[in-house]
Structures are given as C-alpha cells and as structure tokens.
Length: 363
Image 1 (cartoon, one colour):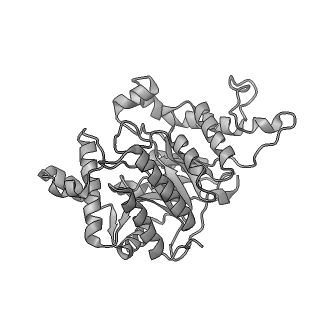
Image 2 (cartoon, rainbow, N blue to C red):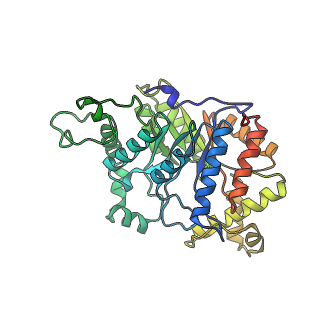
Image 3 (cartoon, one colour):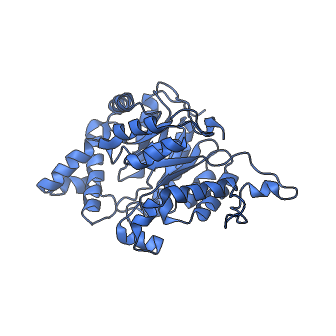
C-alpha cells in the first residue's frame, strides 16, 4: 500500500493537511435531504479548496445526525467529486460483520479508485439499547473486547489472504483481490487503507502496535488527546503500511464573518449536545431558540466546558486556534468538523478557513 494514500500535503500556510469530518447534521425546520445536499456542496467546495479528505461518521438513533449509513453517503459523494479522499470516520466495526464492511468498501473502492479510506471505531455510535438492536445481542462489551479479532478478520477479507484450513478460506469479499486470480481477471492496485479511531488509549495503542494510521476524537475527548497521541507514538512499530506514525485529530471549529455570530452558532450546537447528553436527542436548534433557552446552572456549566473545546470566532481567530492546537499536539493532520443549525453556515465556515490559510481557489 502506498504511503501517499495516507499522508496528505499541506496547502497555503496551513501547518498540516486540512480535512473534513461531516456528521450530516439536520437543523430544526430542515430535512435529511437538505443535510445531504449540504454534504454534496461541502464536499465539492473542500475538494476545490485543497482539503485532503472528507470523512462521514456512523451514528444511530439521533434525529439531528443523518449519517447512519456512511457507505451509502460516500457512494453519493463519490459521484460529485474527483480527487478528494472519501472515508468513514468511522464505521463502528462491532456493529457489522467484517465481510459486509469489506464488501461495502471494496465497492466504494471500485467506484472511486485510490481515494477511499476505511476508518474503524469500536464504540457503538449510539446508546446501549440501539446498539443492542443493531448487533442483535445484549452482550455489548463482547463487541468491544473482540475488536482486535474482528479487525484481523476484516483485514483478511480485504486482502483475501485467509490461510489454508481457515473456515473462511474459500469466502471472498467482492469486489476484491480474488477477481485478479480469476481467469482473465484484472484487479485494482488500490485497497482502502485502514485507520483506527479512538477517544482513549485502547485504539491508540493497537494502531501503534499494528503500524496503522490513527485518528483521535479531540472534538469530544480533548483531555485525552495528548496522552493518546503519546501512547500511539510510543507503541508504534513500522509496518508495510507506514514506516512512521501518522495521526490526525478531529477538531470542532466554526468560523463566521463576525465573532458574535460564531458564538450564536456554537451555542445552538451546544444546546443540541445538552439535549443529547440528557436523553432528549433532537434536531439542531436555531441560534434564536438557543438564545431564548433557560439553561440550568448545570447545563450552563456543561455548555461552557463543551464550547471551550470548540475553536470559534472570525477566520483569523479560528486559524490561530487551529495553529495552536496543532503545535500543542503535534498532529499530522487536522480534520475539522463544523456543527451548526444551517448548512449555509457550515459551508461558509470552511470557505473562511480556506481563505485564512490561503488555500487554492477554484479556477
């Protein structure tokens, strides 16, 4: 596997490659169709401006997040883009049979050769009851505990290299390498690189031991970022995939033309998180609703803590915040997620960040 399928190139004055994490957020008064149209607009824009990759995250049973089926969304985005890498940030491996994931991402690779990433997480991406419905079992810890074995099985399906005598030796993920071994077969030289995602030390250490690229969820686990990245680098062993560690971090950032507007938008997103964390998930509220909301002291404390890790303000303020974060963490890539009520606000945020770094402009 070519390392250049993993490592990106920084453009303009950005300290490292910039990428996108899309939760396909749905605002109050909007539909999932609206949100998916925004995703298309955003993918086209960020491709034109030199962002390196565009990932979609698997979530379930959340009305304000329409990304329950990353593979379906990525196939849609592949039809509207040509160069930007597309991937999952991530697919929650314990929710799915490894063969199914290998087939889905083999299909995506056939649609968009050489630009598909397979990011994998071991969390359910939802609450326990929904996870039980997805996995058809109440023994949820087993899925997380079995993650290394599931990962090994998935990798075998992707490479089509189960050893002789293995019960899956004669089972093949199609599209995949088996097609090259069939009479007259020709197979793509590309295979989606596997990334491990995490918000703690488990996946960081596993990614390091396996020599895989690692993505850390700084946007909701900021206190663990530096320890996890240190553990990843300390655990790293060179592999056929990477000769040195490569870590990106997910960063919540929102730029607006005026600082006050950025504060209004992140307040609405924070109210959405308050409701989610208190068992009342819903659509992302409008800034007006958030401004009128009577936050309890505990909710206000949560909002202040949450927004302390959201880089927001004018384009210059966001650029300074991103630069500082990259210096503090040593991240090799910054993957920006912008959560707001309106799709136009999200698109404008990425435009402003691209301008602030002098990223390429469309011809």
